[in-house]
Image 1 (cartoon, rainbow, N blue to C red):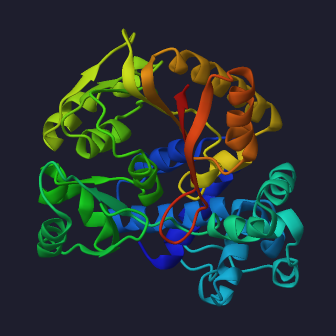
Image 2: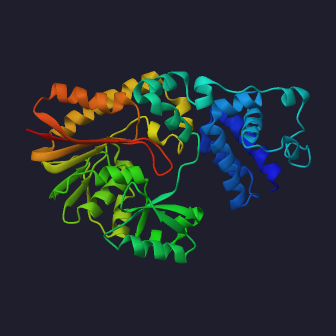
Image 3: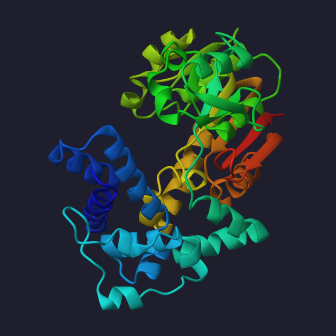
Length: 384
């Protein structure tokens, strides 16, 4: 496909998303209809679509229309691309620009310039203060590809050497001693021997850092209460290699890949649909807005509502209560989110401590999204 044909494909897909289709479905349906498109074509089109999703409001303002075409015009204007080199009307290329398109478009301001819903931008400003704009701007750009070196299998230097031999260049990430940011060969990672053998896992650096934040005491029994696909379970297994790791999730189907992932990583993880007994450490990476990770799933910020936030806060409160009952005497309860909204973080913990005075905080860490990692929050609690 020519670059211009890729742009037209992105326009068509964005129109489907604008009509209500989820982004992944729209991309998948286009791929199925377009068997002629190669892997590089699909990757380039995906990048265009996700760039527009991250900048949904600002591109519409600059492009003069809330359509796929308008947003791509705005995106190309942001990137300084000469529009007449793309909108040529040649075979498979977008039609030439109309006079109103050439003259249209305005500079976005306030929440539109930040590419956030109005109500979310107000929460960013109230929760983050003078850091709000920086956080919002980071969420407008692509996230880094980050690996966790599995210390059950080897060290960081060996991992870097093995990856480099497969054309994957990395740098040490300052957020975690086990984190490597991929600088070249990002698309090769999933097929690399280092990844397929479990020597490295795909995991954000801030996500690794919240596991690093746990105290050095060696727990015997650990429960990953909201395990999902098991990324934290495997990180906990590497951090505490002598501990017994149990994974639980309210939706057991989410855990279906954990046995294979654990085997590949050289870890032992027990699956429990209903955890029994008490645990020295209960780790709860709870369902949340994902606001610290919106650059990875940008359409989530456009579909997120105040009612969604209220429902999530209720769910988090319930999880905290249930999980606290599973902590052994003198044990630890870790509460984590990939959110940067205070309702889900500090305010949630403050409410829990007010209702449960026998508990107190040990440590908290908060990471805003930046060039090295996503936004995350963790608080570690213990009972008097």
